[in-house]
Image 1 (spheres, rainbow, N blue to C red):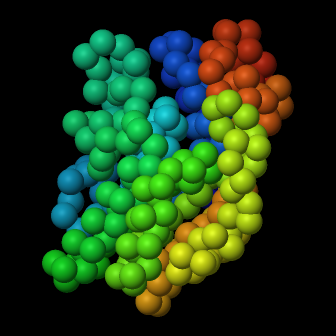
Image 2: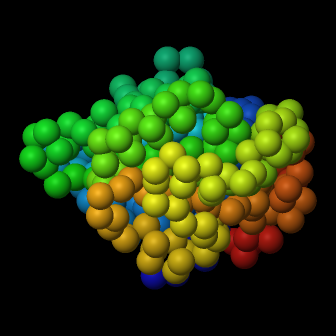
Length: 265
């Protein structure tokens, strides 16, 4: 599988979505594209032709502001039609700037940060109660870990030994208004999760092979969290680690420059 090409095409699609809708949070979507690509291409038990399949694995985009990345992946998998992408961010569109479960392939509304992991807890517990085998994955942002509801959910998952639950923290080191470590002292983030009773792995969130290997691992008796070290704006040199792109919208010339860097021109 040509992971680099897949991620490049997804990043280009996210750029187009941001440009056409004049939508923010571009860099936040770019930092998690590789994670989303690996999840949907090689990890999740998921049927694009039947997105409501009862035995599917559940994926919660808890960092809902990265919805453009999720939409690009769902379109690649055939859940969304290309024509639907053109409606992103428009009035009455199902492709809102934060995801809605009214859209096929979206499990939960995740606009306000800190809600995705609690929802994932409920789904993972339901899987056990119903004697199902599906797993639940939740992708969080690092800034989201400022929310108390994240740590309440972390305690709940550890208490109930939700070993079918996997959290991934997109640790791109930025929040909307500054460096994550400066806004609130997140580090040592891995140690915090361990103290809350989780199995913890730190990984490169842009290494497709490492993501594929790690995310396929099962954990006996404990929920697992991956601290995925990423770069905000990854893949576009003039956007990488520049927090202005949390809100900036690319021009057509900037998209053309980005496509050249991605090897698509």
